[in-house]
Amino acid sequence: MAPRVAVRWQILSLLAFVSLVRSIDALNFSVAGKQIMPEYHLTAVQMGMLYTAFTVGYGIFHLPGGWAADVIGPRLILTVAILWWSIFTGLTALAGELPVVGQYLAPFWAFFLIRFLVGVGEGAAYPTTSKTVANWMAADERGLASGLIWSGAGLGYALAPPLVAWAMVRYGWRLAFSALAVLGLLLAALWYREARDRPEEHPRVSPEELERIYGDAQPAMPETRPPRHTPWRALLLNRNIVLLSVASFCLGYVAYIYQSWFYLYLVNVRGFSIVTGGFFAAGPFLAVTILSPLGGLVSDALTRRHGSRKGRRAAAMMGFLSSALCLYLGAGATDPYVAVLFLSLGDGLIYSVVGSLWSTIMGIAGAHTGAVYGVVGLCANIGGMLAPTLTPLLAARYGWEAALHVAALLAGAGGLLWLVIDAGQKLAVDEPGVVPVPEARVVQGQ
Image (tube, rainbow, N blue to C red):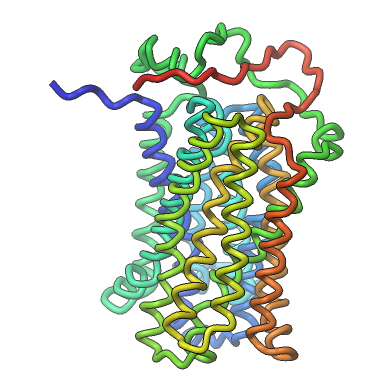
């Protein structure tokens, strides 16, 4: 008889699928824009504003999403987040025909409001996911777990253009959004049914699995209740959290170049056809799918051998600095196919850092993982808000090679910051009534 899969890995599989669906729902509007723009007479500038509306909602709501995951629990908050963004994904299909449109709102402003609200829901997703990983995974498994979640995101980004385009051509763009909304509603129901805030609350988790997660430090139920107060001052002034936030800004700047400009760069600068450019534009996202879990696996292995301080640092620096090198080489490559290869690796390698980043946040923040991820994630998205605008401005003035060299410099800076980040130093806060769960010792098991 085959051994039963540990419940924590089933929960992780669900989180990876949530990440995949979230990334498709984040990218679907840019694909559908080809039909939306002529139908509603939207200009390229207006479409850019609609992309920004999503990003602003997404970035800002990392903070309340993470705080709510800490205080209320990730099971309910992630359920609400999936329901929220799925409902507004469905409403996107009706944006131009809503009763208020025409009488009170132009179609553009209806789309603007709905895209912002989709971003609000998605903004709570990863802080809540990070809190779930912190609660459910053993300390030496968190890098791989975080990488697998972002692998789902990379796969979603790669699948979104062909899937949404196929549905759009065959059935129309509205049905594509409606189908994704239904998928999200079903996923929210599945998550709420299968998940629990903590492993000791789940009826299928065995004592052996609890020992693997907690080691000798299994908490009693009253000791694991959520914190009543979030020590924002201590979080915002903590040296490690500030450094992680700046490093994440660098990561977000690089990552959002691929999500906003890479396809047009391939077609307009590197000379690929529309079809061929679309094919190679999936390269960075496929690299993310592979290298995110690989980076997390390396981070966990180095942590087991050298401890969290040296292990997380080494893995993060390797990812950042290798990404910087690939960006530099790809930007200057004369052969367009060599450029695609190195630039795709640059995106995959920057995301290979996520396993170390998430694990470090969990190790430092403890009961406040959601709130700290909210702060760090917001800074990553500030970089993401800046990159789509600054990159073409730099390219227009100095050329695309120089614009990509700026991204390479930021990736290098992000790597060097890890020289002074201490993943082993826990946040020192006094939280009345809450006994923090100690780090699990390394236990060989399921």
